[in-house]
Structure formats: structure tokens, C-alpha cells
Image (cartoon, rainbow, N blue to C red; front, side, top):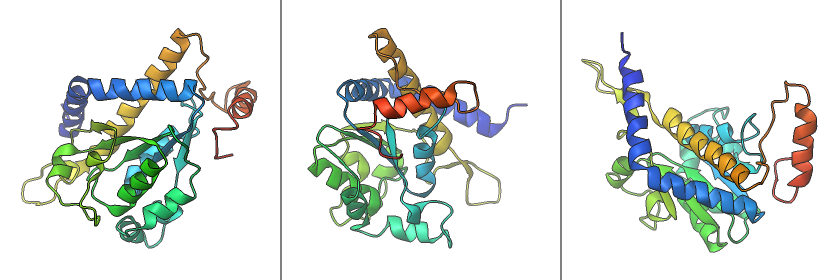
Length: 244
């Protein structure tokens, strides 16, 4: 038996690695140069989009240099959880988040937003760009191009980013149709976008190693020597790590 969701995800992933190879390669190169230049890296997403940030942050086998922007009012443990939707639509809030983030020129900010229409991501990106930060966006281009921006600028995320990676999902994110039900089920953005970013992480590490640079990759805290290795990483990169 082939589960429809599994088939859908594998098809999307094949489409992504084929059609987004150029943008993924650009992201890999940008991350490599950012690490070599000892510049800073940040990641942001609101609500479920923030799961990608959590995947990249403080993870065994992950890059130690990705600083998460985890704004508590838009995390999924907020109650009532509907507040997260209100906050990501609140114009000006993203700028407030940006003002307390230590952005510097030529840093990198990864933003994940499926629709790319909500003000919090747009305001954060606009602020970061003022600081000379380079923006990588993961979004759904077909979806985003068919909705209006909720920001007064009229801009959507893909119109502001330096690199745009399309996650090739469907409008509304869910993908499986059920007869007699108007709403599709089973979103695709989390599994696809985390796969994209783990491709980036693994290729960045490979590229650095090929250049004779030890990749700043976390060891598991549950293997012998892991804590000592990670402690050395924190010390070596203390000027670009802001979550300790």
C-alpha cells in the first residue's frame, strides 16, 4: 500500500531538489561564506513556521551558529493559541523583534513563511535589510503570489528576500483531499522545509570540511564527550552565538 501523503511528500521533495537546486546552492554558498567570515546567522518563523527554526537550533548534527528568533507570543505554547495568529498580523511587531536582535551588516536571516503575507515577517525583514542583513526566504511561491499582503507596503516575503526557496506546496499548505470534506488535510511545509534546510546544513559542513575547516557542528549531549565538544564550540564562536 502506498499512503497518499507519503507519495505526495516524496513527489514534492523530488520537485524541490530539481527545481530549487540553484537557490539551495546559493544558500549553501552564502552560509559557508558567512561562517568563514565569522558573521552571524539567524532564523525566524511564526507559529508552525517556527518549527524549522527549532529544527536548526541546538540540535545534534546541526550548525551551532544558527541563532533562533523564538518570540514567545508566537510560539505554540501560547494560550490561547489563537493569539499567535493575531500577533503575526500585528504591523510593527516584527520591527520590535528586530530591534532586540543584534543584527550586523552581512549577517544572514533565514525566514520561513508559507504564505509570506503576514506583517511580522515582513517588518522583521525590512528592519534587517536596513541593517545590511542578507535574507533567505523559504515560502510557497504559488500560494503567496495568489494572496494579498497584509502589510501596508503591499509586499510579500518573496518580494523582499535575496534568495527565495520555493517549498512547492499547495495553497493553504494541506495536501490530501477527502471526499465530502472541503478542507484538505496533512500540511507539507514542515517536512519539506526542514528537509531543505538539513540539505543546506549537511552541504555546508561538507564544503567547509573540503576547505580544511572543521564544521561548527553539535555533538549529541547523550554520547560520551559530547558536552566537552559542544562547550568548546560555544567558546570558539562566543561572539556569534547569542542563545547561551
